[in-house]
Amino acid sequence: MINIDKAIALAVKTGKVSFGANSALQNAKTGKTKLILLSSNCPKNVKEEIEAYSKISKVPVITYKGTSMDLAEVAGKLFIISALSIREAGDSDILKLAETPETQEPLGGEL
Image (tube, helix red, strand yellow):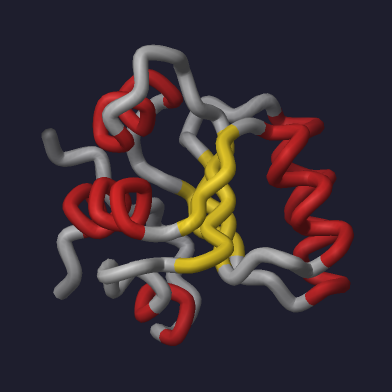
């Protein structure tokens, strides 16, 4: 089992990651990202829009168990993060989460 918190931190440190709902929405529309993480308290309308575009462009979307503040803490940022787009994972194995069968249970958040 992958520790998602460590995988997110490593992806932020060594890979190419963009932060924010607007960036995630743009990446979902263009399909230029490999994985999108949404916090558990991401606004419903934003979440639905990102998921709809991600489905069209076949980008996997994972809901993070923690809040946007928890996601920011894991990423090592001082601002809240409702959505995170991973374009390149770097040394992280976070993209393996997208390969596993889709589970409805949110992941991460164990600080």
